[in-house]
Image 1 (cartoon, one colour):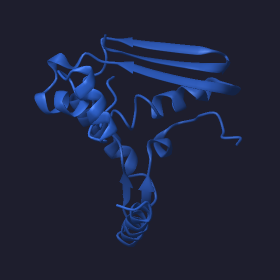
Image 2 (image 1 turned 30 degrees about the vertical axis):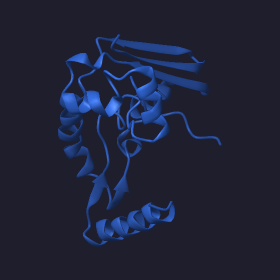
Image 3 (image 1 turned 90 degrees about the horizontal axis):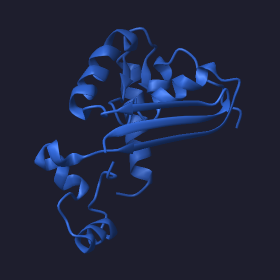
Image 4 (image 1 turned 60 degrees about the vertical axis):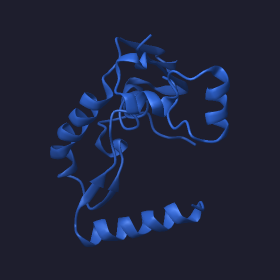
Length: 155
């Protein structure tokens, strides 16, 4: 697929959403919340932000087999490297925790020990977003559209 095709699809999707008078939200736990919306929301109490760092470490041994295969679990280093080189590993191998740190005023750090179960959290994100998405004007939306406040983008 060429890089222009996704933009064409996106424009068509946006026109359809506006024509149908609906707001469409793309969300989940990651992407959607853990590594983008949550750090953005945390920045709302900062007067400035110099850097944001989010890291996730995950033990996939208890996850479904398809997920394990998707991240290359059980492969030798050579097999894993080959899959990466071929573009067949579609998920970064993520002990199970999420850490978010913001360098700014104030500096902030949050660590979620034990992680967040992706499937359950994704369903929760979708379900909990319904009442908010109904309040938004038509078009394509991101989690940023549902956030209360965040530090302004000064770029």
